[in-house]
Amino acid sequence: MSTTSAPEALPRPTRLSDVKGWFFPADQMLFDWFLGRQRDRDQLGDLLELGAYLGKSAIFMGSYLQGAETFTVCDLFDSPAPDDPNSKEMNRSYSTLTRRAFEANYRSFHEELPEIIQAPSSVVADEVTADSCRFAHIDASHLYEHVHGDILAVRELLGPDGIVVLDDFRAEHCPGVAAATWGAVATTGLKPLCITATKFYGTWGAYDEVHEELRGMLRGRDDLWHGVEEVAGYPMIRIDGKKTKAPAQPVSRYEAEAPAPPAEPTTRTGGFARLTRTLKGRR
Image (cartoon, rainbow, N blue to C red; front, side, top):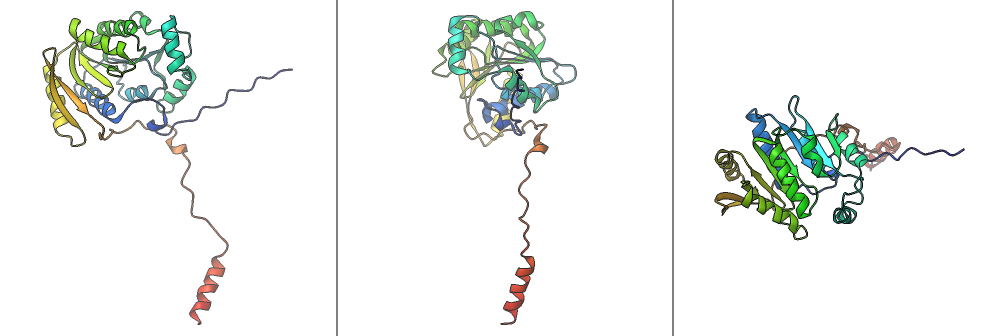
């Protein structure tokens, strides 16, 4: 009689920094600012992430859900890629990615999982309602054709004044992302709000007010540098966030289960110590 052992339990992250991924403090600060601004202005709408890896940015985004809003995450995870170039990319960069690992990480910080589409990002336009989202993070394939399609899909899914974020738009190993990003600025009306070392932030909606508020916030911070450069007729903000202080982090549901610091050692030498002091006092 053969038996199948239960899968080994995955470690429970107790801090966001325990989750592997590339989501740096400058971008955490900007996600917090854009999503917090939407919350403060009662701007409702769903959240969307294309490409989740092990869930670091998804965990962060999930903290900003309001009321009946939906958070949708689309990723291949451990499913086969739809074409050979994408398959090679997955095998090279994301061979350890599994849906089970993502779900375990996400559930460490949130009781309920997001809506998960385990499929190529090309299906997202058929699964998410048009004009329903207020914030979308594109971090799926690095191949031009796929990123170009993701941008066009997100353009239809974002509601009025929605924000889109594109990852790896300037990485040397991802020229397709750069081509798709700046191509969208040149041809689709995507307006560049700001860039960091790793991400591009833009909108197809109202620009001036959010841009001025963003500049005002940045002027009040002493932990980063920013400058303005005219791009496609818009004063895009460049941000150097190497010293940026990260905002408040999502709190793990298992934080209380983290090992307590070791207690002071207890010994049975207390009587001996008292006797030693007594003898010294008699000298």
